[in-house]
Length: 255
Image (cartoon, rainbow, N blue to C red):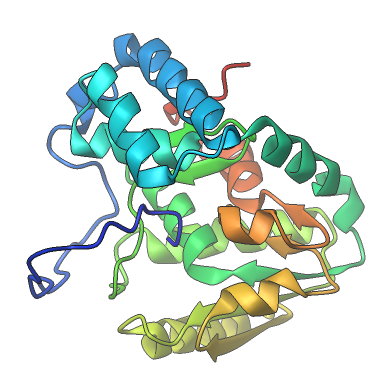
């Protein structure tokens, strides 16, 4: 959710209430992210990483690449979420843990980040593999979160995966500034109690600083955290791969 490009707006528009019942695709996503678009978007992500490696600022580099490939705003967001420099990809890969390394350990979960990705997978939303091999969604939370039809099933799949891989406990972090974070915290605690799962939930001003210094492995796809944390696991990708069959994933990794 914190990967989105931050342009300085000239007009401030009040956010519309979030009335979504699903975490599914936007109306034009079927066309914008069709299979015949994959190769071009992957090239754009590679070019953006090349420019970032050479010191270009993200907004100007993204505009340059987006204009070159005539990308829509939503396609540019996907490219931005998928891109990273080779050095970033190498550093993230070095700190990435396999599922087998989590047995008997506690993990710290970037709550909105992981949950919305699994929700999007269940709802048929756009999922993409970035240049660092990490799974990301296009349904990021912006200022407010609404529990949707996929929330309960997503938590069930996450919990089942953690149990199957012997994870000792999970500490969920939620962003306090996001509207309804307290409601989701209650939903998580209730789920954990009913399912007898060793989960704790904390609502904090910003999970990033906590995740970056965590001694336990962190579950996230947030680029800021991936470049600073000690160890991490792509929990959303593992859960989607193992328990959401037939999901369409846009591979922008270039691999």
